[in-house]
Image (cartoon, rainbow, N blue to C red; front, side):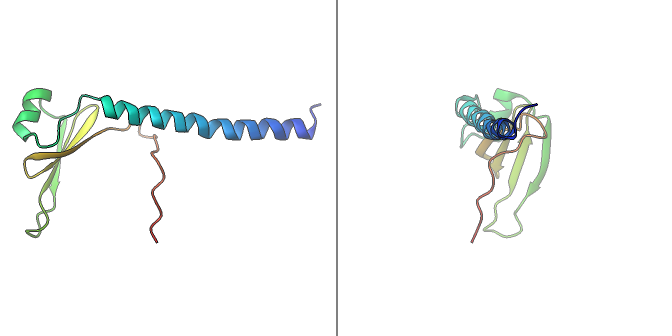
Length: 110
């Protein structure tokens, strides 16, 4: 029968191995986003649709309640989501690889 110290050592090794695997996968996803073929900031909606085709989904616009709050549109494609301020791209991000994927922990606010 294995000793208690062997069991403890194996448990610790497993505990430290799992976060390292998750960290590596997150880093790989970030690197993939840096080299991905995504719409460029400043492109118009027409340019994005001409290059990438029609989005799978156009989500309801948000904002616009006040002049200082521009309307934000979101278009969802298979691999990425594009965010528009009025009709210009402000950001494009890769979608999650799976619904259970967890990104980095949010920064606590003081």
